[in-house]
Length: 253
Image (tube, rainbow, N blue to C red):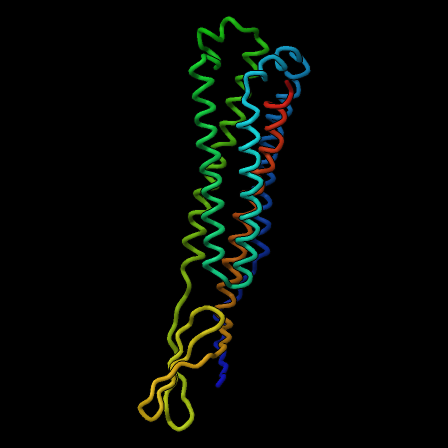
């Protein structure tokens, strides 16, 4: 047995404004980091040997692992959006949690890396740093500023994804009573896409597979998809910035 029903949409969700707003925000972030990259380029030209020597203290294995973590997190972010498009909320939530976990591991690695440098006195203003050249001091100043700002963006991104996890997991549920043949009643509880319908007739309760189309719910799903896409755009921005930071600080030696 198969039945279909439709509920009218209460409003129309226009994603254009949300997407334009997100792209404007991304543009401002790119301007911020572009200024830092330009500053790095100026001092890199001014102190090429000092930058080359100072970069020798960077841990290339840790930097490589962090790069792989963020690249993988971009993939899981895309898979989460694709899962939501197929109305697979559990799958979308799972990929979101994996993305957040990869970002958290990135921050843990960065914490230990910073701790090692600080323990060795490799930071501007330390007594040990006073014995190094001005170019090396500038290198570490830029290193802490740029990677620290990036780490804050990763942390903010994890917070945004945590909020999206709550939004994706919360499905509007509604119970609908429909008249059935023979004067029986059909109780339908929305479960997202495919639904189970319990039909009570002649004192017998049985479950039948039914497909219902809720226009209002489709609008809600579209709104969540746009929000998740915007969150994904922010996360991809974080990954792209790191792809530039990695060679600038870890590979120039």
